[in-house]
Image 1 (cartoon, helix red, strand yellow):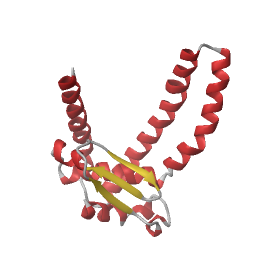
Image 2 (spheres, helix red, strand yellow):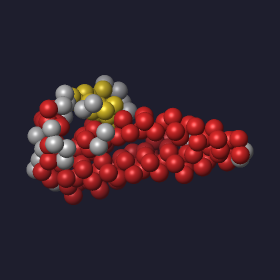
Image 3 (cartoon, rainbow, N blue to C red):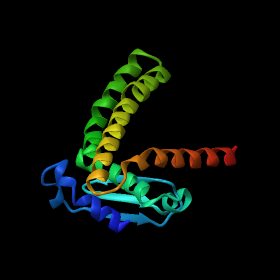
Image 4 (cartoon, rainbow, N blue to C red):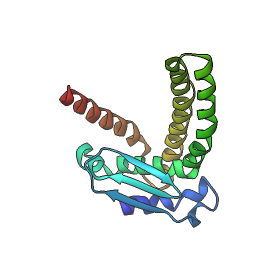
Length: 160
């Protein structure tokens, strides 16, 4: 993971000038969860389960890590935090005008998920560019999604 991360980090300035000066870190969390995330500030976490359960190739792992780096480069964690108060205030206002269920649905599907989805698409696009710049194969990205969603479907079936 560290080698993949290092190869990708060498190219962050092409996306966000001066980003190579950030304090970048990657951590593999010793839990069987199939996930990766960033908390911002150049910190990326990949859960062991993602590596073990999905049998990802190096290119597929690179896509996941590059995607999380993309969130960092676009400061998505900061953006999300700065939007929490206005979104909450709008939700309170809507709850006064509508039923609580209606206002919750509007806020969740009309605002929060829309913002989150646009951040995910942006991180995907940046991740693909970083992968290519670092010499990984961007065509591995679709297969990464397939493996992830197949694993999720198997877990849902097992729970059912």
